[in-house]
Amino acid sequence: MCSSRKASRAKHWMRVPHFSRFGRFSSGLFWRTFFLLGALTTVSMAAWVGMISVVQREPQVQQISAQVISVVTITHAALTHSAPELRRELLFDLVSNEGIRVFPLEDDDKVEPAPDNALMPDIEALVKAKLGADTRFSAEVNGVAGFWVSFKIDDDQYWLMLERERIRGLTGVQWLGWASLVSLLSLLGAALISSLINLPLARLTVAARAIAQGKRPAPLPEKGPMEIIEANRSFNQMVEDLQQVESDRAVILAGISHDLRTPLARMQLEVEMAHLSDEAREGIQSDIGQMDAIIGQFLDYAKPTEASSFIDVDIGTLLADTAREAERLPDVRISTDIAERAHVMGNATDLKRVLNNLIENARRYGKTADTDVAEIDIKCSVKGMPTARRVVIEVQDHGSGVPPEQIEQLLKPFTRLDTARGQANGAGLGLAIVERVLLRHGAELHVRNRDGGGLLIQIVMRALA
Image (cartoon, rainbow, N blue to C red):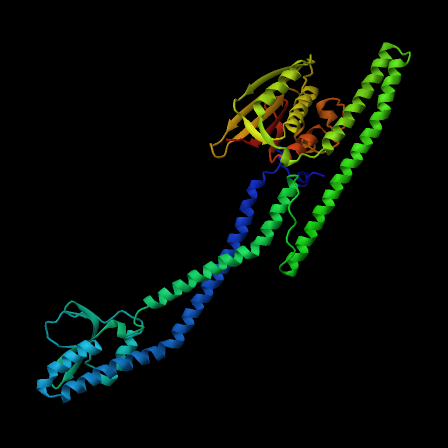
């Protein structure tokens, strides 16, 4: 059975699914997995950074304080115990070799506050406990940035400036940089993991959509985790079974149709040769013709449409030719509005069968109560942007239409809504054949009642550039 009939249809609208929209589902699942992994990574990173900050805070404060105290103490001792004539050379060595500068502390120095750092209050407390409560700290003195600490030699006060690079851990820039790098690598890993997780599902879905379009997909790889192997193996077996069922059905229908047409031909010959009245002969011939038409519908329904047979089809010309052929019938009046250069990819024979079925359906059921002539409006237009153009075909009649609650039944095989559309002849496969052929062409089929009475059938196909 055609897989599209398993999908839910709207009450007043029905269409063959447009499979290109599946990308939304696959991409949505990818992004869902990606964001979940990203959120987990972010939370884990935040917890890790918080834990490291708490655990390392005290050792880091102790280390930096000890370093500052050590440098100030050694500098103080070196300056105190060195000969006055050697102090200039000592200061030069401290600057060039150790990156330490010593300046006299003046009252008019422009002093900025200490570095804004979460560890700074604890560092100040430990340093002042060793060097004295009057020890001052600054992030900038007289426009020179650095880590400044004051100390005394006798009654003179001095500034000792350390390069900030030597006092590690005072800012979170490095932490932020490393955390950003790790987060980026984690997100890339999450994207890779999401792709690997969704790849088997994407393959399975593409293959399922191919089956829905009447194509036979390539076998899915039976490798990977056990669950994927079992799912792909079951799907591959299902494809083989469906292919066998399709082949058996076509053979059975073709055989039955052939076996039935042979006695029908004999009956037709016997009727011609029998001594019957004209009225009886016409009635029997009409019945035989209806039986032969029903057999033809079975064959059309069972006949597959191969994508390899698709060519560039001028659907506008094909529709105009079909309309001219139908106008020869005495009970049909057709009006057309067909755009030029409406080209699609498809099988011309099968598309011609679709158009014939739609026009015949409108002719058979589109007659009003006060006339025996079916008025049919045929329209073909090209819509959309140049990169996404669509050919829209509309066939509508002016009959009594179909009760809204019964529209859903129209596309089901072997179904005729005789109570709504008048007495019908045939097996009820006309619109089912249309749906089956359009499904294999990747087209959309919409069915609804026409404003003002009658039925409107709309076909939407991808247009060629």
